[in-house]
Length: 196
Image (cartoon, rainbow, N blue to C red; front, side, top):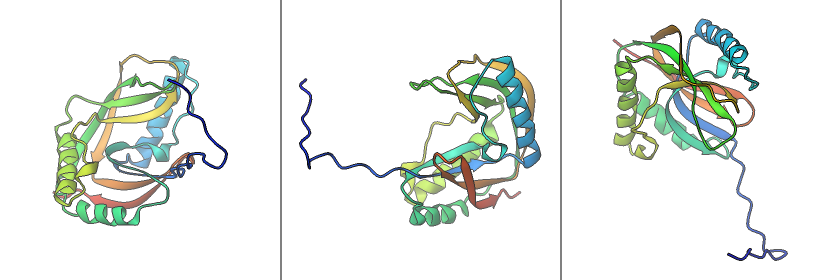
């Protein structure tokens, strides 16, 4: 296929830079996040990884990714905040017991922690949030497939799945996170408690 010519003054328009990500997530308590950071350093050493670890305050389990934008979409933020009020579920335990690299087409692969085998309550929360979004007309962000994990870092080296000493926490809420894309910062916009 011949290369398309670009004439002076007729260059394709540049797409705006995506600066703001938005997602619903579970965020570990500070003490657990610090413990995970210690584990990341052990994994980096034992697998000879060079990727920089995510800061403890950015560790999370994504429930539903709501997209990347150029600026924070206030209408979507408000709609999600209204929807989240309709989610009713008791607190539950989450446990992580394996580490591995996810494969992708990029050179840098995510090293992640995987949730233990008992993810019934976690999957139920994912489903409840997705169903509430769909009922409110936000179904385009609902993702039926769910692979619970927590990303730790990105590295070229591939780490095979292996067990780690199990740890976890009691999930008592979920959070709407504003990610400042490329700036390594997460802002928690809203938090909803799980109720008995």
